[in-house]
Image 1 (cartoon, one colour):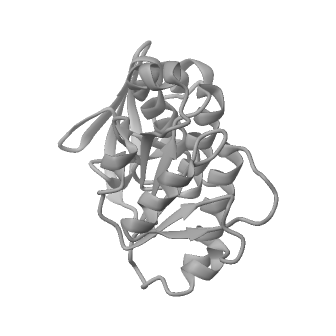
Image 2 (image 1 turned 180 degrees about the horizontal axis):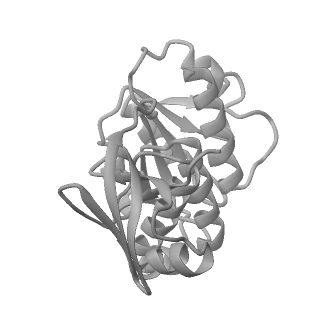
Length: 237
């Protein structure tokens, strides 16, 4: 049976620990017991681990042999901020699909109250990505950046940079990926509800981005992000 994987909150030598609600879930909900074995990620390395002590808000492990895992994807998402419940869904699912970095972006059509509140949501987004990483057996969670304006996000480095645009009809996302260099980074940009405005698309083009499409169907922001991630992962593998 596949062992469940946990990302350690604390690591010291050959010892690791889960603390707080993280530990409480393992101890009380899953009813873990001393001697039980799991995979534990410590400093980005996956190791076999055995529980040596359990308390209400602390579970300690003794770390054993390292376990080799497949390399992760090199995909960055520029995710324009939209309704938080739907955005959380996108962050969770894109984490499961292997996103390496998620950058919340303030676009022209981002609602003002969402843009103002976004910085306070980053900690929650980190927690969602952390839990999704454990569930999907990733070695590390994605980096969740602080929200930034589109002009700053456009300057982020990347190999193949693709803006998903409803107005693009001729070039499919899969077509753009055909020329992607092996092992290179893919950066995907998604607009908010209502999509990009035309001058934003002009700015993307001026910065060297390529527009791509997911087809003629108009998708919600979270659906587009998940669908595009699935296409990129399938193509790169």
